[in-house]
Image 1 (cartoon, rainbow, N blue to C red):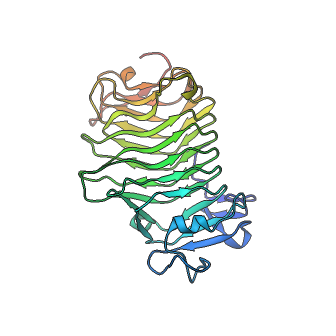
Image 2: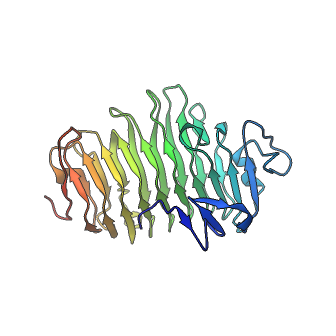
Image 3: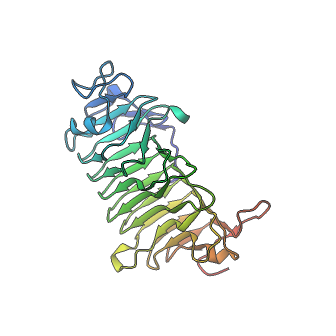
Length: 307
């Protein structure tokens, strides 16, 4: 289940053909809309030559359960004055470009988020940056619907403003969070990197979570019996919590969490390896943990029992 498939054929992404993750549009089953803040306007039909200006407007033009696709051009930039709400079932928002040319969502003055509230939504290849303020923004992305996918998204470190939690998923089944880069300050940063509560059949794969987290880098600890993650797959992630405060773990899962936890690289700031993780009742295969974020400290194989 390692991520980063370069070619999907047949079937494609999420249907049709895709090359290096990009859908080949003449094989795509749903309607296709284009967005570009540089040349677009929130009128018309959202074609390649006459795109829409904002993602949320484009979502409102989509048809539920039609697997519509919104293509966002490189260099697109939005500063949120309201949430981007993915409230139409089956819509995928796909950002084009690499590095700083990825479509960029700026949040801060308005404490906004990409709210994935409709089932089977997808958000691919976006950057999230914070304004030059001291605001603490709740989450870059919030997921509350089944079957949602976040892939290739990243949060950018800011000197003063921080995301409290970078991605939050709550009471949603079949969620997938893949290939994301979630980073905060190395001192006094965020509360958590990814929070997942009540998300059975979850996939968290290929992500980098790195920062100073006042609770946990990967967090599933809401204290009710319905909030554990069951049958989850967590694999091939790099997870670092630079906090040295007791109780701030790199990975903290509910005692009743189940599934497979494999090939993850975990680093925490606490004095013993076992103090830096708790994976509940998940099966552990070939994951490694280190007890210091300094240089020349090598990890040991993680087990379900204390080391």
